[in-house]
Amino acid sequence: MNKKIVAVAGLALALAACGREGGTGGQSAAAPQPGQKPGVCLVMKSLANEFFQQMQKGAEEHAAKRGDLTLSVVGIQNETDIDNQVAAIEKCVTQQAKAVVIAPADSRALVAPIKRAVDSGVKVVNIDVQLEEGAMKAAGIADKVPFVGPDNREGAKQSGMELVKAVGKDAEVVILEGNPGAANAAQRKAGFEDAIKEGGLKLVDSKTAHWETNEAHTVFGNMLTAHPGIKGVLAANDNMALGALKAIEEQGKKDQIKVAAFDNIPAIGPYVKSGAVVATLDQYGAQQAANGIDYAMKMIGGENVSGWQKTDIKLITKDDAG
Image (cartoon, rainbow, N blue to C red; front, side):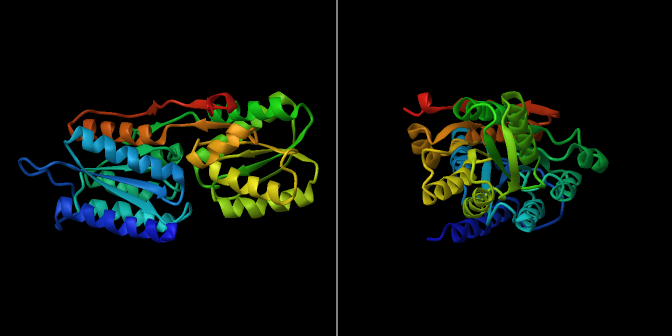
């Protein structure tokens, strides 16, 4: 089945599950009935991305292990499908879920629906992509929505420094950026730029491919035509790295261009093992979701949680690929 169809189907099923958990009345989060497990909605980005497939699996396993909540999982059609993320949050609020754990597709556009959720009494935990601090403060919810996630800038710098080692000073490199509205895209770009500056590389182009493999294939192909001397690619996620690798192979430059990436999805493993990808960065998506659920349950229980709850990262190179 087409992955996009699966993602849309997952959205419909997860929203229906939210509805079963909370009933149909009102806009506020009602207290669970005696013996009823609180409902928690996990709202992710594209389920066509292996990173979020892993996150979903980890979250479901963690919820089953806890046994004290009902988890609903929502995946959107693609990385820029903001409208369906907004709809998912609003549906969970309408159906009286007790908490929403969200990896937002956009760091500003999701603030308004999240504020509505918070104002309705729903606990919200932000994972993976940090919501924009200024927008959160303006909405009056900055101290009510904790962020559970990694240091994206530091992780990208670590990955980028491996590319420095592989291509050497003064080498021409490019950056494939994530969604322009996402904080983690900006942070990873900044981390790559830190590595470029520290390593003395030459940045000749930087463009978004919106986290998507096919778009990255096209974008990087155009970059390579414009700059045939490119020696390295800094891809803000593994999906985009896969697109760049396809273009590299098509143009017969398999041994001439190295790639540094981010996420450590299963599909990137063979390329890390072969050395085509000099590094990726594991940010433990499944654990992020599990931690987000744990914090959500603490908040449902009355505990105050705020600020950045930093999660682990690990640089993955050929030595780790087995």
